Amino acid sequence: MSKKTSESEKTQDNDYSSGKILRSMNTSPHPLAQKIFIENLELNLGDPQLFPASFQLENETIQLLNSLANYSKNTIFGNFVSGGSEANILGLWAARNTFRKKTGQKTGQIVLPETAHPSLLKGVDLMGCELVQLPVDSSFKAEYDLLDDLDEKNIVAVVGIAGNTIAGVSDPLDQLFKIASEKNLWVHLDAALGGFTYPFLGEEKHLLYGSLEEGKANSMTLDPHKMMSIPIPTGGIIYQNKEMIEEISYPIPYLGKDAISTTITGTRPGAGMKALRAMLTDPNYGWEYYRSVVERCHNDALWLKAELEKRGMKVPIAPETVITVAQLPSGKEETQKLINLLQEKGFMVGSSQGWMRIVVMPHVKHEHLESFLNVLEETTTKMI
Ligand SMILES: Cc1ncc(COP(=O)(O)O)c(C=O)c1O
Image: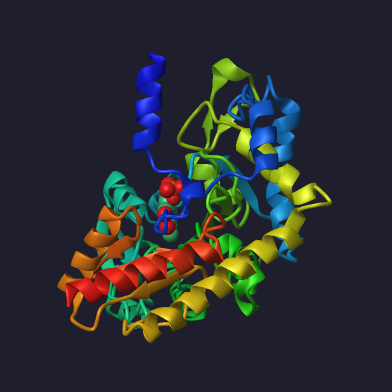
């Protein structure tokens, strides 16, 4: 590639440091994480014979996450994968194959909230299952009462989202756990966002890591390349215990007798796992560092809610994590026009189901939000 082409590609791409990327759930990787990532480019977690020490570290790192969140029974098992999408698909795959073994039925229903990330829709499709979508209430939370209308004998899995893509809120997980335990259902939690936000923001942490150890959930998606600022591609899937993945474990004989693949990809980067481990164990960073980052982002999301309301926008909920959703009083269409105009001015704000969504990730600083509000004010004044 010529130097010219690569420069022109660079100028067309957006840059997190501009402070104008306000809709991405990814962020600029932390400098220490970048350094460790680059030092581990050769590392393939798919080949335990060649990389036995790092293979061993993988599960230790998963346990480290658990213990940092104050859970330490060490029964959970997990893998680092390409991202939240692969993790969601793996959770549904493990559920579908377990369902097949248990019931002898080839297929069944997968129940998802309407707010589910598209990767879960892909998962339902790939599993050859029937999609059942649960409506959400005015706070963007799934209405699990509707599970009572379904025959549990046909349910492969039901999904709870901890930090959904549209509004960053959590479904009523206690209700989900109660129904699932009565009906003996596989629960997959999508905590791609919430797995690394809720543990720092109060009481909900027991609903995540603890839910696996306490047997309330079977599988859970994490995504260190979101809030943990680890380079792409670094997702994670964790399970209640190793039994959960028996039905998706494939021996890879040409890589040695210990090579059992439990993920979709064979060759699997380990650099993100190493970078995460370094961030968690470095005395200058660790859990407390992440707590301060998440608290700052959450406080800014709350501040933004108040500022948008002052400017006449409708903000239906207080941000639970790092996403603020808002709408113009004139409705969805005008809001979409506003989003388009803001994007023309370089502010990449999100749009979902007629709502403008702002995601306050670590690269978004308070002053970036102040500049954004000035441009928003200017733009809405011209629209009237
Ligand atoms: C709730 C949720 N789950 C899963 C994903 C998919 O993650 P990835 O983009 O890492 O595949 C996202 C992405 O934003 C998400 O918001």
